Image 1 (tube, protein in one colour):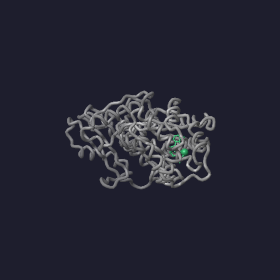
Image 2 (cartoon, helix red, strand yellow; image 1 turned 180 degrees about the vertical axis):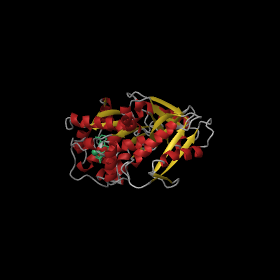
Image 3 (tube, helix red, strand yellow; image 1 turned 120 degrees about the vertical axis):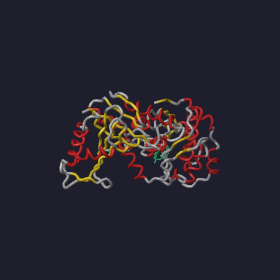
Image 4 (cartoon, helix red, strand yellow; image 1 turned 90 degrees about the horizontal axis):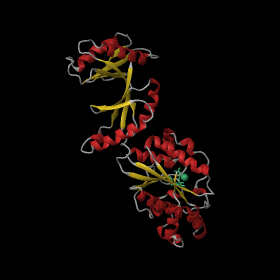
Length: 391
Ligand code: ATP
Ligand code: MG
């Protein structure tokens, strides 16, 4: 029996005049997720369908589709023929197969209902009449009783216009959110840690196309650290689509701060440079915001006062999607999206180079600006930007 994947999208964002725009983004993202697997995509009556794929590819296709934002849910359906002059033999066969499977390894009677949607108006029976007729085949198994409101199994039958019906039971939750690309672009500050890849996921989920910048301090940070960041980008791309990654050499800036500024302000001033450089890159790539993986109070550089001091040099809004989350909530998402195991590999980050023993926790903006004043800010920023590499 041929199988079809039914894709339902979030209804809410598809209302109103933006519908065509959202849908075109979603369709583009779905097609791009399906690339490399032989199958056919189509849309009809407010749903999308993927068919003509090899049985062995079904799991891979479902895996890819559950990572596409904007998809509400998915089902794998049997595609069967329907003729108006017959008693739905193929639908019954598929239903009985599904009902037997659902009853495997269970005891007692299961409650069920059959839900029919009938687009094919050549069939004279109403949807409810068809459902009642089909229910008879399930009842005949002796393992089920009908319960329309409180059921264990909802067997669904979509009778479509072209003489076929789709029969399915399971509804697989989709990734939710909005299609990537429909909420503008954001420049993510991507370290090698646990948090920033999760921040990418969160903003992509709201439809943002992600670009990323990583600050590296060779020779204090190694090629391995850089490869790790590229690997995190690759994993995040499974959800967010293509993420261009820019690597900024940060050693000269760190050395200049180390030499000219008070040690306890090292991190704060470093972050101010990261913001400046990230904003310049963001503007060059039409990004409307920066994104960081900061979470309130997690470390000294993530207090309100520290973030005020670092945000001071940003000329774009800074989105911090993890700001109100606990570490274990962030870790749970990192594990779900598959970045965790890579994030915990122990390669040094530029922030750990020249780490002061006691960083200031509640810096005042005036004192930080003053501490930074000996530095040739524009010159340092421009030379770092001149040496950016795409990775
Ligand atoms: P993460 O797990 O994302 O590294 P963290 O808990 O280690 O976060 P910090 O090191 O204080 O926190 O970094 C806070 C944020 O600053 C990061 O989430 C990231 O957005 C940004 N950041 C830190 N280091 C770098 C870097 N080397 N390159 C780019 N962005 C960075
Ligand atoms: Mg970090």
